[in-house]
Length: 170
Image (cartoon, rainbow, N blue to C red; front, side, top):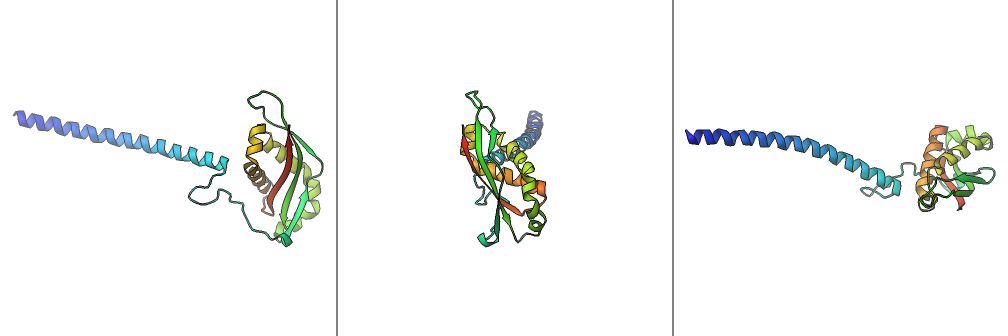
């Protein structure tokens, strides 16, 4: 009788162990997914490659013969986000866009690009304004990619394939 009772207790403990293991696996796998998502977000901000593939999905090769450059009119003075020092900082400089002349949308927008400077400046101000002076100095490629993404989304086209800027930070 004692052996049967002991066998039943062992069986009950095994069932409880299996149930608790299943619960633990579900909770660990969801936390693992969140961690992987966090690592991917951080690596995209820093510009690290994952699995040997570049993070940029906008990269396209356009020859210099097929490139037109649009320089955004005027010098931009962009207020940056306050950093740890609590002081106001600014980025002062200019922005230019590389345009693919072979893209079908280039014909639609090439004549009116100078009238679109306000929209372009607004996007540059929005993106640059999210960064502190230290982040802006060290994350120029990330900022350019973010500006490019927003411009391509706004124009609903990839005829703008690169953003260049020259800023001095104060």
